[in-house]
Length: 235
Image 1 (cartoon, rainbow, N blue to C red):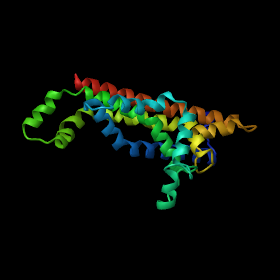
Image 2 (cartoon, rainbow, N blue to C red):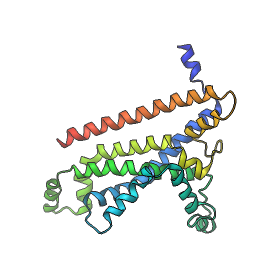
Image 3 (tube, one colour):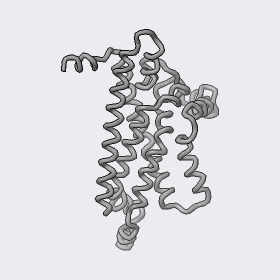
Image 4 (cartoon, rainbow, N blue to C red):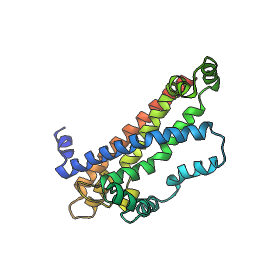
């Protein structure tokens, strides 16, 4: 037991990386949630031109190499980027090489997982229940919050958990967009990479790897439990 406690006796730098990863993952998940709900509704219920294109764009980060996604974010949101330069000059907002930029990269990488889970949950809802609420005078917004959302809530939570888990383990896009700056952008994954590049860093790297596996497995188990609850509720 003492050896196990000693094994997880993390240094200050390691705790900073863990705490920063948790903060980045939480911000990425919560900030992408409203857009994720809108896009999931559009893909599940919408019938419009370009629906297939939207679906492809949403899932594009899952197909592209993460480094490519990070490079595209650098082109768009870098200090001299298409969107980054106006944000910097007009609003004083800088994303490149900042923890907020890491949150943006993690949000982009986790967004497809969130949308897919939410979309499947919405598609599983019996439309007759929504139609019944509408015939009783409820508007579309009221129907969503009183009928659709309660039925989809486990699926929505599962999507958030998956997005959070993806953000916790993201490496390629973040290190390309915001680099590996200790205390600012060094997440759990980039800290592991950094420790592996220096002599004597195997011990801290192994500790962080084990901790990362525990956190990821916990998130996946939570997502599976929520999905099972959603299926039971729908049946």
